[in-house]
Length: 195
Image (cartoon, rainbow, N blue to C red; front, side):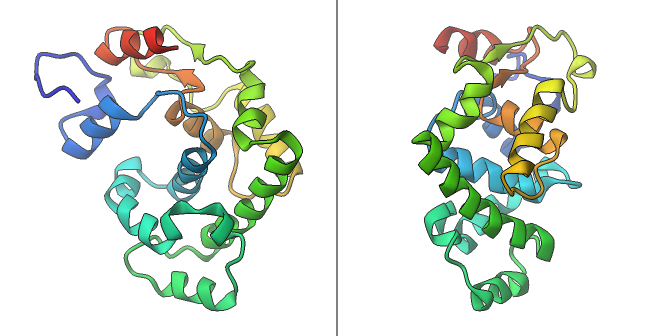
């Protein structure tokens, strides 16, 4: 992570240390590991309708509440565990999102069985290579795309919940399926050169 204030970042990172750290070390970096992909899927699910900073502030609480984002354990959650999560004031206590997380863990495992890994499935939509955009300003960055609509539709068909095209596009950005750093951001070239 760079602390130099003269360094150009995407404007959304602002000055909040949590945002800056996330921007500089995670956002847009290609993620192929199923455990990490699922973590971002949970976080994006809970982010729907909320700000990302709200999620980042509660990320460690989510990690603790959801067994370190272990989809194998989450898929086995029973009513007792569900009620514990609903009562947990440290996370976002939205019953539909909690239920969606449990459902998505089960469906995640089904996709793994079909494709060997969830990463292989999801990255197949971009031919296993990140889409590199050339946006100059944040205003150019879309909230969703035709591709995120296609992925969303396929996931919903497979039983996933809270995976609308906007959630999926945010997931694609977070996991580096698209490089949406603006071209003046120092991370744009760093990530591009890693690919």
